[in-house]
Length: 103
Image 1 (cartoon, helix red, strand yellow):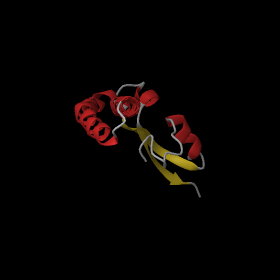
Image 2 (image 1 turned 180 degrees about the vertical axis):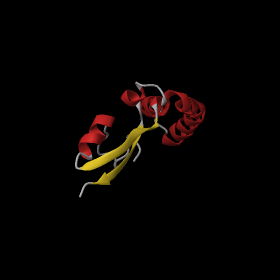
Image 3 (image 1 turned 120 degrees about the vertical axis):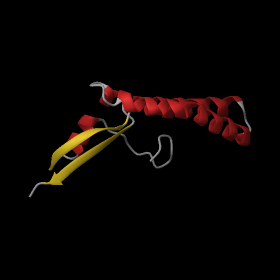
Image 4 (image 1 turned 30 degrees about the vertical axis):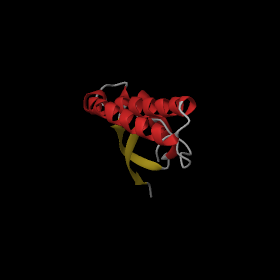
């Protein structure tokens, strides 16, 4: 689910993942999409929201929003380095969890 869509019900942190899967034996948990992606998603959403207030034509806003996405996309590659930092989980966009059901 993408932030800002009608199907965006909740988001969780690493600690939230641990809580949601507390009945499972967690083998591994980590950042799969880091702070750079979070920055891009938030900036993209901010620009779109701002443009919708300034420009009333949704077609133009859509084109400008797509262009903004293209400009921001290269920043996502910084996640290859950022997700290795100890504080990356605080600002991560997405997590993965590998767990087994306890019997």
